[in-house]
Length: 275
Image (cartoon, rainbow, N blue to C red; front, side):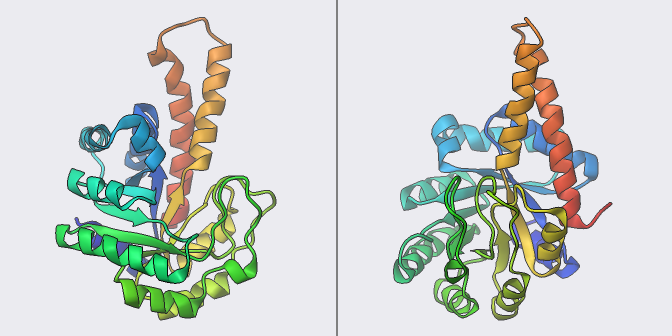
């Protein structure tokens, strides 16, 4: 199934696809095994930093091979790219979707770069995601209301660029929150009424379950989830390292992988409305 078909199916159902970043073979396998256990598809994401670490070809080969071996449906997405050259490399390498992030640039520049990526991606059947509004990065201040996605601008942005997915700023933030977030669901509803692009929620780590469900019920069809995966993996890995003298990494990594599996399973269930 093409990613566009999957997104549309989830939108019609009022559910979402969990999009999780992976960083190595262990986090990749943990995510895929979690998806298999709950019978769900997932989107696998690589950030530019992960590509710097693994390499584009290695990341694609790992994702495709692991997906086939585990036996689940998964799509590969480039997350938060700022360099059009990297976007081009990922399109050529076989990614299913790519994100160009110019959200911290002026509106016209954001439009121009999104158009450029759409022109590269769409002829290859690759979907394009962009971000509008300001979603704070790890450790930054909380977003102000005037920095949230404007429904009017969102409508104009999608029409002018032809993007397929729009990441919205509705009170969400990347990384861990300094205090409990309060998503602006009414803003989300208005954006959904005015925009045909599939809406994406970034910064899901730390969002309370009830707000997560409400966002999905009101138009979010892709939920990005990363920070808690890294944190959970490293927490359990530290514990394992402190409790053993073994040098066999095949014995040390599994507890951390199992913890990530349980975490990802719970988040998939939030996206799909399962109990």
